[in-house]
Structure formats: C-alpha cells, structure tokens
Image (tube, rainbow, N blue to C red):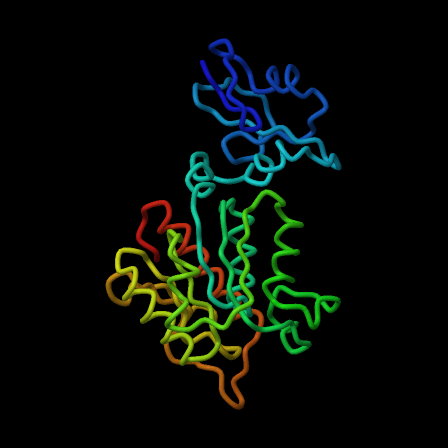
Length: 268
C-alpha cells in the first residue's frame, strides 16, 4: 500500500504500523500527526494515510517546511490551495490578517495591493510591528509572511487602485478579496472587478466596526459571485472605532470564505 510521510509517497507493507514507520523514517520524531490529528498510540496504517513526523525544536529544511506547516490540515486540501492565487485589495485591518491566515493555510500565491504606509494607529488591529512604522504596508506584510512561509509566492504593489488598473493587477486570481476601509474604494473595487471578471468570486466586507457582538458578523452570498462578510450596518464613525477583535473576526470570515470557494464549497 501507499502512504504519505512528510508529503513524500512511500510504498509500505500492508498492515504496517504507525510507530513502525516512524521508527523506520524518523526515529527521533517526538510528534506524530496522522491524517491531520496528533497520534498518541500505535495503530495500523491504511492505504492513502498521511503521516507527518516532527522533532520539536528542529529547524526544518525548505523541503520539509511546507508539509510541516499543514500537518494539522485536512488531507487533500493543501494540494488544491497550493495551486491557488488570491488577490487582496487593501492590507490593513482586514487584509493583513486575511493574508496571514491564507499563508498559514498553504495558499500558493498572494497578490497584495495597497498604497499606504504603516502608522502607529494601525497597530491596534493590523498585522504590523512598531519597527515597521513608515514602511509601505505591502512590503512590511510581505516580510512578515515570508517569516511564516518563505515558499509562498508574493506579488506586492504599492499602488492606489482605481477603475483603470484593477484588472492589470488581479487578472490572474482565482478569488478576489476586497479589504478596504473607505466606502468609496470598496464600491469601486467591487463594481470594477465583478464587471471585468464576472465568473470569478469576490469576498468583501461591510459592517465590522465597534466592540459589539462578534456573533453578528456573518458570511452571506449577496448577489452572483459577490460574498459579503459583516453585520452590514456597523461602519466606522465617531464613537464607533475599528478594534482588533471584531475586525479580526470579520477578516477570518473572509479568509475562510476564500478557502471554501477554492474547495468548491458555498461560503457560510
């Protein structure tokens, strides 16, 4: 039978045991993941099983890193995500955690566009650090993403998006993400992308401000290929700011919707 061990296909005898293969392939491994779940007891392996063997504290080779990053994922998902390209317009409070979540999930390529720089006020909710203040956001975020997974392909653009250049930067994406704060920019990106690429899905957000209930943040199909995350009403305004918890909930709803779309599932 055939099983995957650290993403390498092995032919093994029928009935081979989990710990038998650990001892044969990597006897110093102190973490054994079987089909996305830590295994604490020996058990027979079945054809098509996926094992990941990890030694705590070991710096993996570049060849091993990818498989170790997704060791806890559902088998078969990574092969799809690795081939996918996702565009993110705006890498602030929504876009930066979306990018981090997608890179941790194994997305193969991200196209990031934003004209802004990191400011101190961004640190209350965005995936940046104090030593990155003043850097273009896409450059700062790319540096952080590369620290998580140096194998991800990143296309970064320090640019103000408009109706004339959206298609130039995002024509090759499988799924598009709208992650702007400004309502006019949101409308422009949504209308432009869906009119130019009507067969490609777009995941947008509306109503994520304040410190209200997290459970009012939902994902729904608005119309056609437009999917909308948020409560649809709580916009940033005097007395209603943008805060890390609720913005983060919405960002991860958006990231999860992207994964569902790539896997052929309706976002919810």
